[in-house]
Image (cartoon, rainbow, N blue to C red; front, side, top):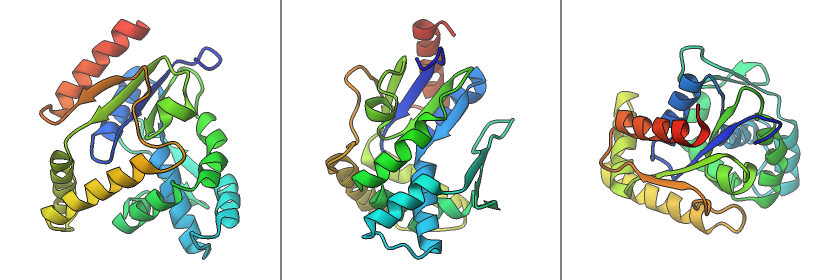
Length: 228
């Protein structure tokens, strides 16, 4: 707990449903919400626009520490509106290429260090739900409730495939399964803040569960553990 601010972390691989679940929990509890992945996506987009190459570690670190970003929460829940240098980039940062670039810059230790305090600043009353890949292990290691949400690679790829079709985009399911496995390998093997459950995290496999079922289980955990 930070200054009497309860913190719930939800970590997990891409496609596990952690973003959706985190938003549902934050809305239900009236807590603030941190989508840490959005910060790395914002950095990837900012680097692209300012022509900072991904091998320019010093340049990326400076950009990470000084990006002009704003998050406006949706009072009805769902993704916040994200601004980069006063421009709404909520859609732009969800581009597949930006997501892939974000995974690359997220593996740079200096970048993660530059963004650490920016992430921790989201912890304020009445509470915070933070989703990402190292929320419970690094950024909020003293959080009251740590959740690690996962699902099989095939299930996560199918979920992503459905999302792409819904947006009018397409990719082969086989290619997406390969992409998920490659992303898992990269996130899990990086030298700093690799993707793994915190020692005291609650593990939940959502492969055969609906979003409603996952939410119900985790909401009960919040009630039992935090009395909220």
